Length: 286
Image (cartoon, rainbow, N blue to C red; front, top):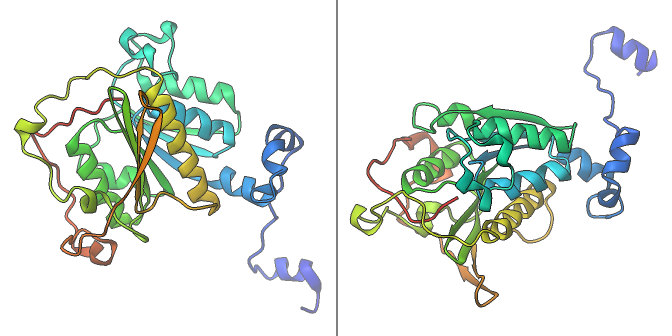
């Protein structure tokens, strides 16, 4: 250590300037900084985190808004749809002036107007076996707002192979479900549903009815679970599925056991083949 820090730098050794919050950031995130469980260290974790949203619809909208407000530094959004007037009953990222606009572009406008700290990365493309590994790579958490079985199984197999946790949400009419699939700890989607159901049991990808506020509740819980994963806070929904009934205003919890016959696991990641399932849909909607 003779010569001190200057000599250390002059010799080309590794060094870094500790990240500090700006005055504006301290003001913006002041309520986080007051929480001992978050504080400045936790806020820096959020600012350095990278979360991918699968969908900018009913679930992706509230999740994106709360993740952006919380200061998650990088938010990726994948969606290949355009804003339609029928979306506005629940997809609160968008507005009437954006009808006909690409959803990812509309979402980016809303989020960057809310928080200038954000880096919003958009993927205006169909998620497929040919691109999912490249898209997921580098993200810390995926918030799943997919509306069909093929996308969910594709996401599961790719996320397990990469070791990325997925915060899963689904909605139908007045009911919603939320859980966390973490390849490192606990069950994944194939433990919950080892195989997709026959096509005749889920014949249509068309939207079913859904109460507009329901995805706001489910998507907000998804954002909460993503933030908990980033910060290492509390008990996550790993291995637990929460079923919410809006008419009864009830939450029920179900345990998800690990299926010992499931071969799509992180331990077997080198053997996982990420392929697409065709012709299967599910009645959950965004």
